Image (cartoon, rainbow, N blue to C red):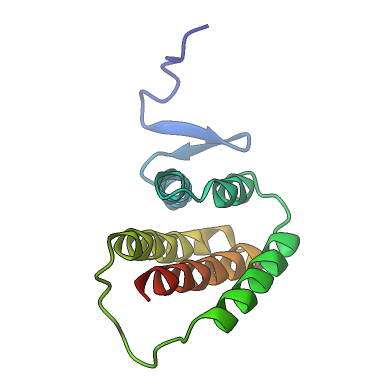
Length: 138
């Protein structure tokens, strides 16, 4: 079996049974989510990669949102959240902050899905990753 199908050579792909333009908003959102799952793996957050795949597959996100909120609650008890912007200096914190910016872009792009739970999840994910970066910085 070849990975090359040539189906997308004309600038069109299939997404959930529909032909969509590769330059359109849907595939821009999916592509950004794909980029996000890749960088999550790069920084060792493999469990979160699974969540991003679930978003791309349009799965239920409510339990994942609640899990993130619990994790954030624990982190917030461990660290002091600054009241102003900070510039990260620790290499791991810098990498996590970079991932956080990709999450924010994925959140903006995912508006096209018109799914509130996806937006809530991505919003919580960016906050969670910010807390992870803060923890590394201290």
